[in-house]
Length: 447
Image 1 (cartoon, helix red, strand yellow):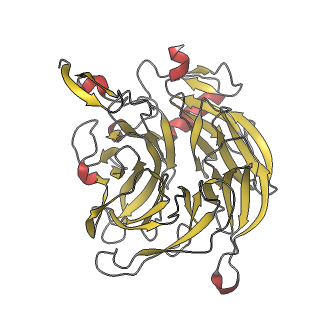
Image 2 (tube, rainbow, N blue to C red):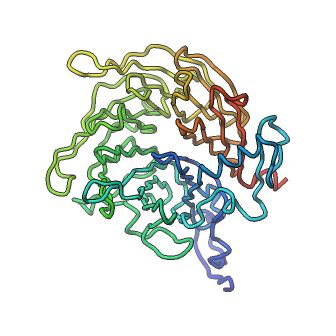
Image 3 (tube, rainbow, N blue to C red):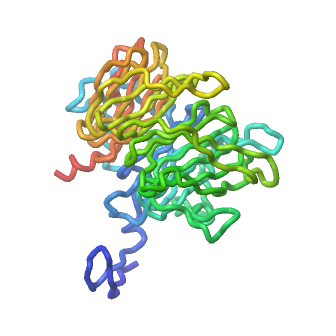
């Protein structure tokens, strides 16, 4: 197919000019490599890692969703420790890290599930995985993958079949673009109501099916419903103005994700508050009738970003930028079953952090904070609120996810198109170090 040139008026070029439309193959994003990876999510059984790529420089016509097989990732680490690089080499900048440069073919052969890559809109920012069940309540063998896409804007979803290793998002083909039916942008009961701009972070409660989405520029929060039954699509239910004065809603996390009525906490970066939101579900009809959001008492605190809870839900930890710290909250239940929501301490972190993940890998509660400007991930001892270690991971780390049973943390290096694997095993000599980095290191190769 040859390029076709037409005249156009572009708000990006701010002038009338000539546009040469490239062929579909020329503008297709990498199918077998990350490209501006922005968010990660580990599937519940810790078999797979979902990667959301944002196509941030708009070089291609879309972003992507990809799935990595974590058994294959661990097998590569095991060979590395045994002294067999197996096509990879020691990273020149990190003592314990194996570098699997994939510029000559992509990561499909070693790590990627080849039939599970799909195209989504640009500027994806968050992704979550929800296990699905059959009508009889049995495990269906499918997971729903849901992503916030700022470019559309939309909530884009796809169903991943664990047995066949394929992804269904409404279109056929080996590398399809998700169809309009898999991009939620209007509300189920009011088609005239559109999704607010800049959907940023999201939470899916696996027990209740609640889908909660924050919006970066409006302060709105969207409530959706993603049925646990395979074959039933998710829908948008309601929109709530959390910060009507212009505050920006950023992070979202549930106190106890397995509890259908657990409180959900949302952070704001523009108004100095951390506000609690409680989604309420009233059974009836298609499962969405009566759902609504009600607010709890805001907790006033600086410039709050990403948030995560301890496994028991009794402590919350959130990234604050002014000052740069992770703040610990006592969220244990007090009188009347209401969380106490009291600040119990802080630990200093790197400047301009955005996200964190929290897990207990067998030696107490740990927090992993990607430090974008330093190219590091900071490991925090959340029991004693102190810095435990720093690890070199790659350029521009942003997204982070953990696999507790595997004793691994995964970091998306946004500025170089790689994924770093961190060893979090307290019994390992490489604890708190990145041991594997996969992907084509874009900025290095362009120099």
